[in-house]
Each structure stands twice: as C-alpha cells, then as structure tokens.
Image (tube, rainbow, N blue to C red; front, side, top):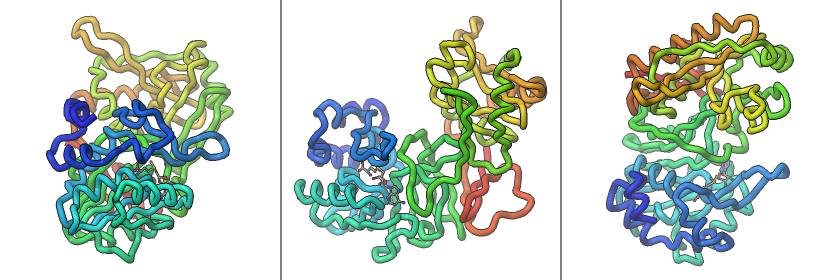
Length: 383
Ligand SMILES: C[S@@+](CC[C@H](N)C(=O)[O-])C[C@H]1O[C@@H](n2cnc3c(N)ncnc32)[C@H](O)[C@@H]1O
C-alpha cells in the first residue's frame, strides 16, 4: 500500500511513508476484508444513518495520505483531529512521536468508543479520545500546531482559528455548493489563507456546524442542491424546463483538469447549484452523463444550464459545452460558455485558486467572489 501510495503521489515524504508502514491498518477495520482495508481509494463503512447513508467511515488511504502531507506534521507537535476512527490518529501519533500530543474528537459515542478500543488494542494508548461536537474545538488541549478535520465542513468556526498557534495550520475538507476540497490553511492576521488544496470526499459534518443546504427533487432521479440563499430553486418550473427542447452550445475551449474546472464553475457562475442525475435519467436521454456524479448548473427561476463535453477530433482531447433548457436557455448558455472560455484561457492549471477565510460579519454588499458562511466569508482569487 505504501508503494502504491507513493506511485500515485498520495505519499510524498518519508515521515508519512514511515507512519503508514508502522500502523496495522486492518486492525482499525477488523470486520472488513483485507483488500478493502488496504484499498487506496475505497472507504470502510463504520456507521450508517436510518436511510442507509454513511455517517462514519474509515477514510480512504490515499485521501488520508494527501491530507497528512498537506498538514506538514513534525515531531513534538500538538494536533487535534476532528472526526475520529482511530487509524488516522495512529498515523498522527507516529508523525509527532513520543514528545507530541494527539487529541481526536468525535460527535458519535459509538465511533469514539470504537476508536478508543482500536487505539488501545494497537498500542496507541497515549492518543486522547474525546466525545464532543468538534464545532467548539477541544479547548483543553489548545493551542494546536495543527487541526485536521475529517468530515466535510461547510464553515470554519472561530474555535478552529483561535485554537491554532500563531504558525498553526488547519486542514479542512470545505464544501462549497456541493463540491468539497481539502484545503490547507495557514493563519493570516485574524483569518486564514490557503497554501494547497485538492479534491476530497467526506461524510458530512453533523451537529452545530452542519451545512445549510437546500435540495430540490425535479423528478425521480434528478435533483438540484445549493448552499447559496440567493439561488432560486423552483422545482416545478425547472422540471417543466427539462421537458422543453434542449439548447446545445459548444465553447471551443478545452475540457480538461475536471476538478479544477468544476471548482472554477462552482465559484464563478452567477447562480450556481449542483445538478445530480441517476443512471435512468441519463439512459433516457433526459440529462447528460456529466450529471451522474454532480455537475455545476446555472439556474434561474424557470431555466437551467449545465456542462457537457465532446471529443475534439482535431486536438485529440475534449471540448466543453453547455446544455440549456427553459425560456432563458439562450442567456444562461451564453453566460456558462463565457465562464468555460475564461477558465480555459486564463486559469487552466493546477492550484489556480487561493482561498481566504475572513471571520466575522459578511460585508454588504457581498463581494462577487465571496461565499457567505455563518461565521465568516470565503473569498477566492484566481491566478
Ligand atoms: C470520515 S469519518 C472520520 C475518519 C477517521 N478520521 C479515520 O481515521 O479514518 C468522519 C467522522 O466525523 C464525525 N463527525 C461528524 N460531525 C462531527 C462533529 N461535529 N464533531 C466531531 N465529529 C464529527 C462522524 O461521526 C464520523 O465518525
């Protein structure tokens, strides 16, 4: 697993490689087959809610490695992990060594009890386990050199910022309009500034910090989701729009680096939601395959536009395009195509975004590049 993680750029440093080699990962997933426990990209289920959705999993090894690399943990550090399971806390303990201190907190008693048992069983008795809502941090052990959040967060509460040392770093999977990036933030005056980010998927944060999201089922297997209060989600009108003829518009721009493009679209469309469609809806030709795992959509009261792609025979790659429905299809397609072209022309590279988190009341009017949250705003600059 360590070799494969290196090959796939999950592990890029010797300390993280040594931590992964030292911890007996399968003993934190005793009921799972070995292939699953050591799979690079699959999670191991730990607990599900009443609808059968995961609320706790052992995170995939690749994502854990990437986030530990982002965190840059050194011997002797004090680290807080928010969202527990045991195995990641064990990696953290290996990284900080005997002079460091690891605290791991979970909101769920079953999860934290299980983590405690696994940590004791594998000899990581010095890791502190705490049952609490991580929204308030764990002030007892603060300030921390690093805080690593392992559930998808919608906001950054003040306790996570004030709980860091002056040179502290927060690694957090931050969700913006249904898409999540693991962002490593350093402190910057009263706020935070990002130093790296990457694609991430996590179970959602529960408790006080749970996401403020709205979902609209347009029809069976087709849904829209947004966390922006300004976006209209009129399920009936948008459902009617899907029955109107589709407008197809091609951008001439390259479709490439899908995760970077998706982030740009999500943050630059003027009224963004995420469109999800199931296999049936795609097979019936109602919605394009781009929506199978969620695609950024531009929505108005009665119309919708979303991204698609086609092979570009002259370059051998793909070209991005737009599908639009409804009375305002033309206008939405024009805006969407503009954003696709702007990205391809000016920002088509890895790491184009720099995120800032500014705690406190949001300015009015809200700057165009800002995302409003309960405890502050996220702004994004593109290079
Ligand atoms: C992906 S799992 C954590 C995986 C773990 N870090 C590991 O070692 O693989 C996410 C966890 O976050 C927890 N969680 C969700 N909301 C929380 C909150 N507000 N405070 C603390 N834990 C929370 C869930 O109970 C769940 O166990």
